[in-house]
Length: 282
Image (spheres, rainbow, N blue to C red):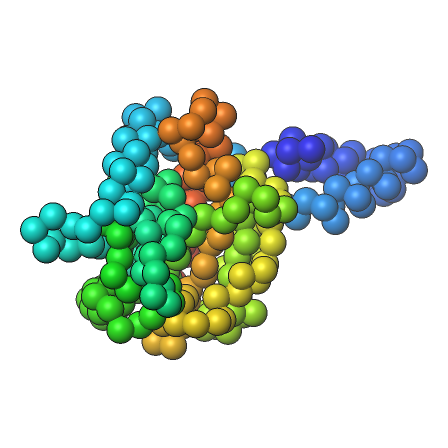
């Protein structure tokens, strides 16, 4: 059952109990209230808002996905850059280090798909975040090695922006049981922001992305982007998103699912922006 359906039902039951002066409603209603409360934590009322994502953003994402996939196994022309940086207006950085094929342990391996880069770039458009992503095949895997230009550019961004948070986006096999897995190095990469995964999960579920896993891929092994950022005392989360949510060019359903993920992450970034503005105001 969709969370945005269950929450109003639960609130109605609570109001009924209050209006009757106590738990005087039928036992089945009380049990239903308990089960819904356990399965679906309460959401802030302000999450029930007008959708942000427009068709134009998804159409742009389809073009970006196709372009990145076409260049995935190609070197950059004329010795150009194999990665790209987009500067934003708020100090949150979104990384897509496997949008194209990375070189690891002596060979090029499969990419996570151009949809990861498309998601990052559309978050730049909608939420004004900073973005770094691969646009041609990478001579050194940015999520496996630190000694490469991608990580040096990322470190420069961290210094320039005073980043609040880094979201590192990856695509996961469609055979995985989850929609999204949140990798936090088993909590170590959060650097004191322990509520971030809970907040992110709530926003994802509110947008119909319900199968959430934590630390299936913890980002603890190797020289991951999440580890790199966390070592610099900045909160970071690795998002392993099932590839069925990252293929807007494939089908209408794929486009819709991509829009849901984009909507959720845009909402999450906006919430983080409001939170930090509130802390500054106080």
